[in-house]
Image (cartoon, rainbow, N blue to C red; front, side, top):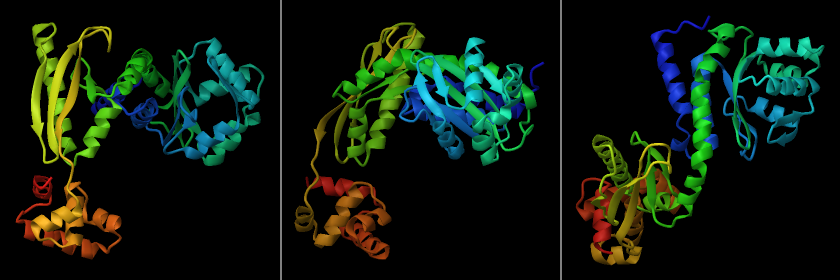
Amino acid sequence: MGPTLTAADLVRLETASRALMSPLAAASPEAWLAEAGGAVRDLVGGTGVVLQFPTSAVPYFSDDATEVSTGVLDYTQEIQWDGVRFSDPVVDAWNRMRRESRMETFSWDVNIAMVRDRGLDPNDAPIITDVLQGQRFNDFVGMIGETPVGEAMVWVLHRRYGGFPFGERSASLLQVLMPSFRAGLDALGRLGAHRAALDAVSEPLAAFDADGRALHRNAALAALLAADPEGATVDREVARLGRASRALARAVRGAVPPSEVTVTTARGQYVVRSTALPPGLFGPDPAVLVTVDASIVRVPPTAEEVRQRTGLTLREAEVALLLAEGLTNAQVADRLFIAPATARRHTENVLGKLGVATRSAVAGRVFEMA
């Protein structure tokens, strides 16, 4: 019998399911798994989570149980496409049994029973006695999915044995999430090559899925947006055009003509264009590709040029340029190696002398001089 879920549990279940199915919304597979693992931990009521991803530089990683992830690495002997080999004989035997039985979800009690059935003593497993219990973790549940290059795992830990709110039914709850986990891993396998191809393109662009969610923003777009203090304005238009084009494509049940809009900031002018992609590139449905053309990009003036044209002191001109980049008073102080109070006074002088009321308006005045 599966666990009985409250309304709050159902919300957490949906959150975990969505997170597991959305790997392309994250900056990297590791970032996706960390976010999804946290949602799974919250669903089952764990106190820590350890993640495993086959292509990660460190195969086991964690934000809230780092001693366990590093401890497991100490007993990791070899990582192959068909699984990990451990120097811990008990855990290695369990891992082989799990793969043979194609077990997708597991729990403390199930694992202990499996190794005992093989005549092994859990107390002979240093990963259990030294790593887990040594860090005061005494219960766990987990889920494992396969990728073409190895296994991915979400391993949820609890300090107290029997401490999971759903008890042994937690593994059943994880089984409900396995289709979402498999879908996420499948999306990574199918679309990872497309993401790499997008990153190799020098043109700034972003791809959006059938629901209007950003699948990927390439490195060129990230660099372009970071270079403009008003980059968030451009990015909002990129996202809006991606959603709008996708909604139109769904309404007409087919491809839509390219759309474009011009976004003007103090730094420059950008032409944002969207176009539909055929099914198969980013899944079974059409997708949307949004490109950004920086048609006019103004180079900021020098501090001396700002000083000559505004009547600011040279230091105030330097502060004005930093404010145009979007820096706070504290960041200005760090950049110029001055006291925060001094940076605040310079900022007040800049606003007054330029005749603007807000810090954000400084960029417009500075770039007028470019």
